[in-house]
Image (tube, rainbow, N blue to C red; front, side, top):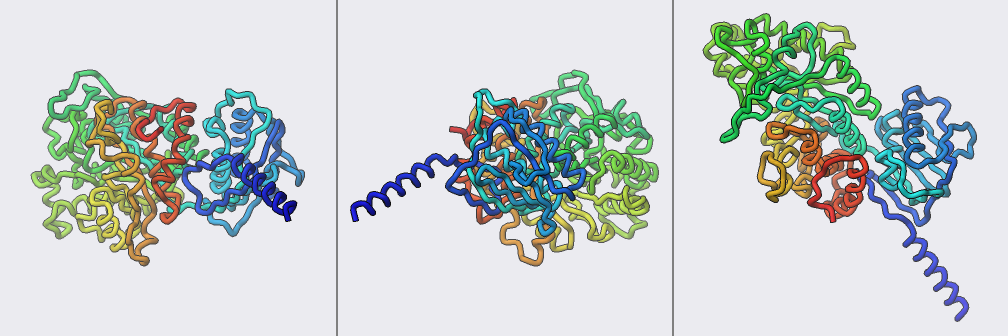
Length: 547
């Protein structure tokens, strides 16, 4: 009996010791299903990869990029093989959804299954998260390692929402290609897949449109870097910038390699003073008056004349160039905060309102959009795009637009999204509070100048529950979630990063992880290691939640 007791005690001690030796998992976003096993797997010197023989060229590209980055970070000799003894085996499984994957690490072997390239990409991102943060950062480890040890796991994973987005406003301030690539890198760490690029504003037009060169010759530049507000006055500095077609193509390719679709936004007919300043002769409601790129924050009344045929043609031409530059499914046309004052005093607008049989000037905006939709429908299928609008368009008669649009709900987001879904529109949740992550994330006096009172903390962002209590018959209309970053007060890319991170990770988990699995204390615990990742990536970030 004593011998039997001693053996049981010894086995218990061994199991406890083995369990204590297993590294903890700090995956963000948390997978749909995950089981951490008791053991570990070790990898040394040589790492071989066997890919399904029926894999597409796009899957091949995913694996090739992973191989290069993994080799750089670990110094292992990463090679492709056809042998069944490969360290990592990637297999096609047509039964899985397009972004889903399975990942198993056990006994020094890695097995991944997916149906589409995105699934393989996300599986490999998760695999890299099992390692020290230097691997995700793509940086060689400062410690000389001959053996890399990771926990054994079984993961079956797929995102909750198809749309997991982040919007950056460059109309107010311009940051440049390298800053945008860093944003895309951070998004890809957390499996986000939509970059909403707000490219035009009253204060600047940031994308080259070859048919209308004055949009960037005039509209991309203003006479102040600082935007006036209250006691802050314009500084008189010549300021601006824009992206050429070549720049856009480079960024589009960079995003596509990370399975991020770019949604370009040209905000029309409101928030358009920069465009009006470039072509006042046919865009302005009062072309006889002087027009300049705006130097102030807030909402300008200088909107596009939606009843002028040349203005409609202008918008159609811009959409055509955007469709050629951005080979993805959506274009965002804004639609928010559009004053009707100048339409009410314009003869063409007054006449058009009578023609459509309305007394609401807001319906001129919907009429304008309907004309653009008709133009898009006449294009070849590969040039057609679906349109997205901010939820203010719900205030007009949206019936002419049909059901094939998406509503981005920001103001009164939950109610607006429910309204949009009830009318048959797809909707994206982007609540101003708390998903506007340009707002201060702490009340500390050391925070950079920005909007808000510091109440949009990491915890507040994380604890927002998307699609809460939405009836089952409307849930299919909810495409997903998106964080927004408006830049009235933010003049440099480092401050953008500081305010983004780590709140972007909180939004990403809301978009990916099933709500019942989400817990802020657990997220906060997993988040602690991300400070090292941000440091390795050279990213500025808010440090309030890191111990």
